Length: 348
Image 1 (cartoon, rainbow, N blue to C red):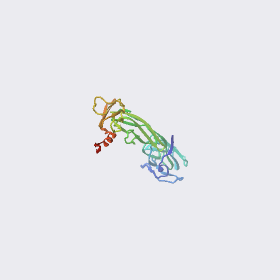
Image 2: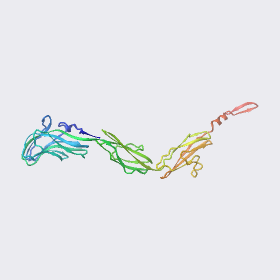
Image 3: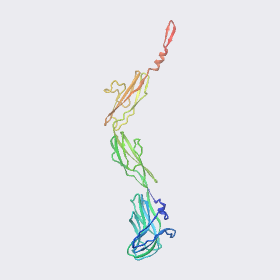
Image 4: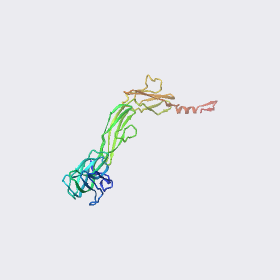
């Protein structure tokens, strides 16, 4: 949805506050300029001898998002030569973009220029210009309601990436196709836990493998919009695991939780629970195995994961601890030495 607004620059629209008075100076003409009250508005007065001069007002204005600029003016008094002696023009950076002819004294007339496409600050002039057909005239030019009209539009997020798949470290360039007026602010989330970016067209490097969703949020005064894309980053598996529980008494069954992340996915697993068969024969090849520990001790566990990029083995030393059973310890505590029916010592 688009919303039309007046340009928010009070000095541009009201009074004479932000304007600079213009005049030219040559031997062929003389221009006397002053701010004059006329019907409660403001204006400039000129007297030109020999033609070819101009007077008016100027201001530097940010034209980003502005599609139309206009001036209401009228000639308050004057003496004229031919019908082709005088016009009012709208200039940007010294270039005439629109002009209007009018010789009717006392009638308000509008001059409107379409200036879509300008961005940033530009010098805007409203000025009347004579030509050399006439040798002498005197004129007061009154101006009012100088406007910039902007069409504000709700933001719509969109972007592309230089490539949507690669191998870590994987660098992408983001191309921002978002629209909206005024120009939105940008928030990029790359989906890998890195800081967000506010650049218009950022570059980002993925250092680990996985599937990552890039989200662009664009915001302006009319609202916000989001757009997402997924990139696929190939790499060696990030192999990891955790024993549950991490220990116990004899004959404890431990489940090994597989915490590996990988893209592309892992295609084969190899587990070694006691180290004796490594690296030749694994004890298990399932995703999350269980293992029975019958004897007390500390055990080293290894997990190897393989995908299309390569193979990684993670080793955790003494990650499982098996201790004597509590029942056996209690039984030892109750053992004593009896001679001729007399207890001489109890177990500790």
